[in-house]
Length: 453
Image 1 (cartoon, rainbow, N blue to C red):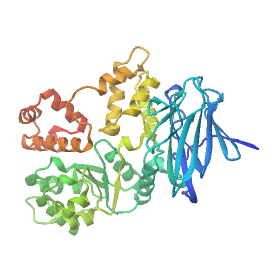
Image 2 (image 1 turned 90 degrees about the horizontal axis):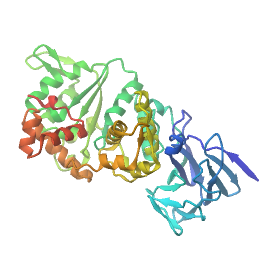
Image 3 (image 1 turned 60 degrees about the horizontal axis):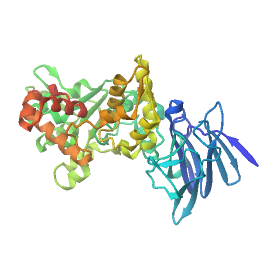
């Protein structure tokens, strides 16, 4: 007997809690397609145990369509580039996990894995992306049948179909109303400040959301900036009854670490030049590029300060580790550009190139790239693969390796601090062209003025 149903958004709806499972489960995830403006991006089909899934064309005004007959599923894709019987995905149990194999069924346009057409049956790796007639997919093994969102649209309206990121969002939502301090660790551009602001909004704390970039503070200025001086309030006072986000936590010197620990221990601090201490009530959210626990082990970060700050540590994955979300993110960015009055359309070749990139600057780089491409696009707003390549392949001296990116950022921040935030002086000190320094400042989202004095 054949049962018909539609793929559902299991990770972006406001639904009850997760459903545990005793068996082995996988998620078949539709990354999306430019051909339907990514309308199906983020759709997830839970798969239990050994299954066979056939992909083929199915004309439906509702988009993707799934029918089930016993242990076999059929996924219908409403695109003319899809053959009647296009490809088959097999899920089989192997030891303590699952194995995924994919083969083309003699389709006219072929089946692609990571942009390459396959000739024989192949086994998929966890990060592989396969393409069925300009529709992009991946499959992930998970420990739960459905990780249902718990009002997570308040933290991230874009949504996610990344099991790891969804778990983080669910935990942060539950902690939002508490006072427990949170550390957000992630590479540049992974959305740490965006997420911290969302946590503050969910918490309903009465005070403001205040951000302090600690990497821009020299030791002799940190007390005045954080705690106030000369009749002016510091950031702790400004954030009273609200949330204070401390960025670049891993950049703190031992001296600054000690002063911050003292203030947090007592819950109050005196302005520079004053005797009486002022109490404050703030929720702390810290952001860092560094692994603070390892810095504690190596003696570069105080263990007592870390224990006060790290009530919960969230490791935000880089974009290259959550390629299943690239369709959702692209759809959100394109809609933002369209609200600004721009006509934007991405070709399938362009999206294929986007899926192949490492995106060392993550979501920030994705947004900047699509924004630039939309400005340079032809009259109808079409973003082509060649146009993306022209932007992405520019030689701006930036490495692809994330560790090298972090080292470059540290070097740039030190040069900014040593030269009072003067980009031209930084260029001379680093032996670089001033234009390149300005490009790096934009890439790293660094404000030179915050390093002045």
